[in-house]
Amino acid sequence: MSFPWCWVSLHRVTPIPRSRTCHEIPINSPFLGFVVAETYLGHGDVARGGRIIDSLLASDTTKYPDFLRGALVAGQGWKRMAAGDTAGGIAQMRRGIEALGLQGGPIISGAVRLQFALGLASQAATREEGIRLLENGFDNDLLLTPLTFLALGRAYEAAGNRPPRRMPTHNS
Image (cartoon, helix red, strand yellow):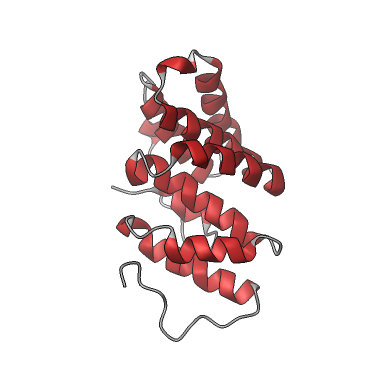
C-alpha cells in the first residue's frame, strides 16, 4: 500500500504515479472521503481535495466522530497551506489536530500530523516546534519514520544546524 500524500510533501522524492481509478472511487463514507481528499492534497490537487473536505464539512457533521471532524478541520488547514497561506493553515491544522489527537491511526492522523510538522518546520518562527514534533511525535507511526528522518535532516539544515551524529530513533 502506498501513501502518496507523503511523497509530494517532501518535494524531491519521486511521486508515485496516481491510478486512474482514484478519480472513480465513489465516496460513500466520510472516512473514505477524507482519505481520498488527503490523497489529492498530497498530489498537489488542492482544488479537488479541498472540494471533498469542504463538502464533507458542509454536511451534518454531528453524525461524525469528534476525531473525524478534527481531521477534516486539519485537512482544511492543509488545503490552506498548500494554497500558500502557511500561517493560517498551521493555525487551522493545530485546532483540528487538538480534536483529532492520535485517533484514526496513521491513515487518518498520521498524514495531517506529518503535514503539520512539515509546515511548522518550514517557517523560521516555528521551526523548533516542528523539529520537536518530527523528533518525538511519530513514535507509533513506523510507516512514517523514514519520512520524519528525511524531514528532520532538512529542518536541521534550514536551521543552520548539522543533524546529530545519531539521528533520534523513535523508540529509544
